[in-house]
Length: 194
Image 1 (cartoon, helix red, strand yellow):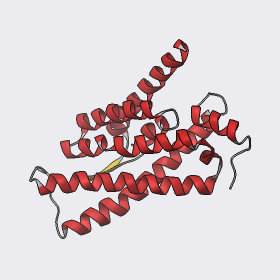
Image 2: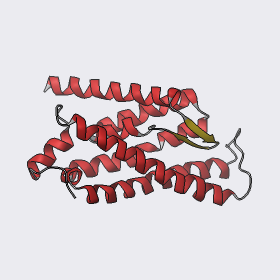
Image 3: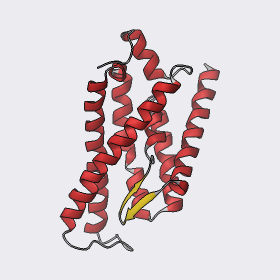
Image 4: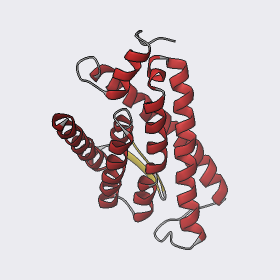
């Protein structure tokens, strides 16, 4: 029991460190308040395969990383990841076998991407509605920006990052115990397939 808690704490700390480092070093496109940082969601999405608690810890830690490197509104968008991370981690905990089915996982991934994007759009809309979006400008139609750039771009960004996270955890799960993969194998001892 103690080893498991130490392991969870260690994995959480490593994922948080990655989540803080990625916004500092990875290429990014910032059209404030929209930002797209390559692989920025991957540490959080990896945490979702471990537990809801780890997802919460990593979401808070990675939001801190964005707070250090980006405008406040972008850091708040990162903090909003708590919503999709907890919902997704709880779903994975209840239905771990989904990681063994490419098609079903991609449907789940799309739902998570939509939730993720809608929550981020809500944060940005709230900042603009209350006049707290200092330092950001939107030329042209605000709603085209919000739903076009942030909406479509956000869904694509989330979808790609979760597939990267799946690739990482699928590879790692061959040598390291990852709870969702362990439970999936117990429920349905097959290989990853369509």
